[in-house]
Image (cartoon, rainbow, N blue to C red; front, top):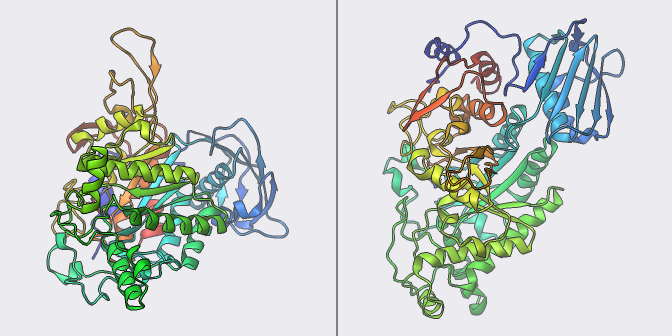
Amino acid sequence: RTRWLTPERAFERYATRGPATTPDIVILPKPLSVQRPAGATTDLTRGMRVTLQGFGRAQLAPALAAVAGEVAQGGVPVRIVKGRGRPPEGYRLHVGDGAVRIEASDAAGANHALRSLAQQARHEGGRLRPLTVQDAPRLGFRGLHVDVARNFHSKAEMLKLIEQMAAYKLNKLHLHLGDDEGWRLEVKALPELAEIGGFRCLDPSERTCLQPQLGADPARNAPVNGFFSQDDYLEILAAAKARQIEVIPSLDMPGHSRAAIRSMEVRYDRLRAAGRMAEAERFRLREPDDTTRYRSIQNYDDNTLNVCREQTYRFLGTVVDELAALHRRAGTPLTTYHIGADETAGAWSQSPSCQVMMAKTGLTPKQLGAHFIERVSKDLAAKRIRVAGWSDGMGHTATQRMPRAVQSNIWGGLFTGGVAEAHDQLNRGWRVVLSIPDIGYLDMPYAPDPEEPGYDWAAREVELFQIFAFMPDNLPANASLRTNILNQPVTLRDDKPRQAGRAVAGMQAQLWSETVRSDAQVDYMLFPRLLGFAERAWAPKPAWEPAYVAGTSFANGDGKVDLRAVEAGWREFAGR
Ligand code: TNX
């Protein structure tokens, strides 16, 4: 399918919104400040001679490769120095008189400097006029979520995305490895997870391979299968590490767990066939006598782990321990693990074990769901892993029963509860990430056109300009809760001492994959929209003051979106 949004069409569409002339600086996301001092040109086409002080070569290799080749003699001297006094990930880049100098206080900052240099060098054909850039991110958490569970996407695609993320200064990859439709990570202790969960049509007892919510058209709705071997996963971790990107794995539980449940049923059958009855019991993640009737949002009636049985917690523990070991092997300790915790249908109220538990504790079925999250969060904290989850589930917990370090991804619609949810969870002291569907669900179509791929439950369209126009600053503050979504002091009516609001940690774009099948479709959905996301997560509030108007419509004031910079990125990476 041809792209709905080509660079040409974008210019046509946004002609009144952006400058038509080619800008002098093409660095996306836009840096804090750029100056053009006087001096002679620096010719990077001659290659570079790099000297490092305070950084190791391995920390910078992919970013260096993005700029120009290194040569033994005669190249441009590029000096990269670790210095103090800059904000995290901040940098100063100076190009002039035949030399490049970079200062950063951490490896991420040095990488960002090189990425800016690479973009600008491309723009100027390698011969750079003098340039000084001072830069630092606005938000510390700049994420991309990729769902490889619904339809599998290849390791090669992940590696390409990681490189693209680095090019645009995104720093968190939330990898959604397990959901109802598939389990995409090899777990040695539980081989059925990949064997069965990675190929959901191979299970002969499957009624259908189709996702119930997507209808009966196999052309749109037959699964793309596969899984990452442990070596694949290690390779993904290594690529991310080399670019200072943190991988946050997720295997959705206790809802969205059909693939795990089915895989463990096969394990149960096998162990029983081998006469190992007691051991087999450990893998029954739904209780046999559970008569609860439920339907998940996506229309499954058999996808929820029983939160009252020890089996569930032991299963999750096995998986997390193996994941943590993999992260240790890759030299990137597992510091945040995403448990899902969303859209739980609560399929346990009639199960014998939950009946017992409710009688003993007085908990309601809904509170049992919160109990699962609280318990898992505490178990993770004991392993020094921060729990992350989707805001609907996380919001049901009792804050005092949660560890201190908690991440919540807000996925309520902006004006249908999302902002209130963000305020509430910021006040709990949590790390709050805006994953709002209105602009953040890149599985929504580019345009309200039935031919366009994607889901439209959250928005009829998420088009490029909406993303550029999203300004967290313009979201309402909440005086009674004393928060503003971006750390500005809130004026309180009762005149008590003013307190700075708690700030959101950042923003994350989501690519859910029920409707996204091929790797080419991944590119189609992400580019150029991901560039708008990178811009809003990194760049300072622009002078042109985008404004979120109401519902899902945006206004741009005197909008000046620098589409030339967007074009440069999307032609290069997703021009197919
Ligand atoms: C909602 S966001 C979901 C996902 C779907 C997505 C499709 C969230 C926590 N749940 O399971 O894939 O919508 O847009």
